[in-house]
Length: 307
Image 1 (cartoon, helix red, strand yellow):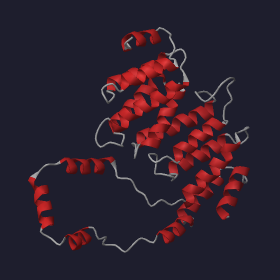
Image 2 (cartoon, helix red, strand yellow; image 1 turned 90 degrees about the horizontal axis):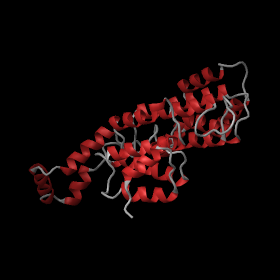
Image 3 (tube, one colour; image 1 turned 90 degrees about the vertical axis):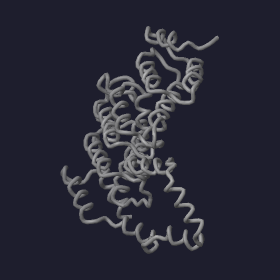
Image 4 (cartoon, rainbow, N blue to C red; image 1 turned 60 degrees about the horizontal axis):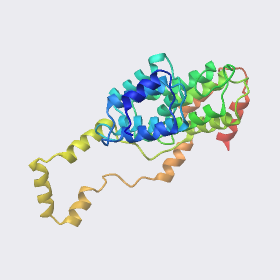
């Protein structure tokens, strides 16, 4: 029997559920033409919002399908455009906040899979997880509302997010992310938090102070320029390669690709990154001075950095 998306969608809107069998049929429907359209992706958001219950397989499919559309649906592939970032936010924010595990997983997965995402989406994702922690309400919570508490699930999501490649750099914690960790720590100081939270706070802030990465991704604009150049069929490219053929290629290529700078001293750069600078120390002192005395999270952080 052929899968009829319109009939299925109407059933879900009327309060139906999405089973594992339904999800398999949706997978075949979504990639029948090789690529999801924005209309199709929007239809998946609507299914996610209206389904009475959803099989766990649905979350994996929903996030994979929407990520493919947003990240690889336009050139340059691997990036999230400002337009698509705003579209994702608009779809999720129709009811004012993240309402489902699928939406929350999508936000984190976009940061993990994309080379880079616009700041508006980075900050929106951080804000949504922080709101869930402070309000005690959201897709990571069940039962009674417990405000200002970090659960194990939320600590895992935060860890994935702040160390994601598309966040503020692969394995690098930004100032905005470190500020958020301190805000959550202060708000949840007296709460019964998951053990994973203290470890994340210490490692996240320490990474901001001492982390090093030699990798800087191309901006989306620069990647688009390179894509356009590679797709170009102008005669000038042909003339360039003809000229290359007339040269001593070994010497020519060595000269063209020779770096004008001395080789990088990565060991030295790592050592410099581990040294806490005056501005970093000033920021840390300011954060710690917000409360009288040093709490156990700050003590663990200072011991870790000193070690």
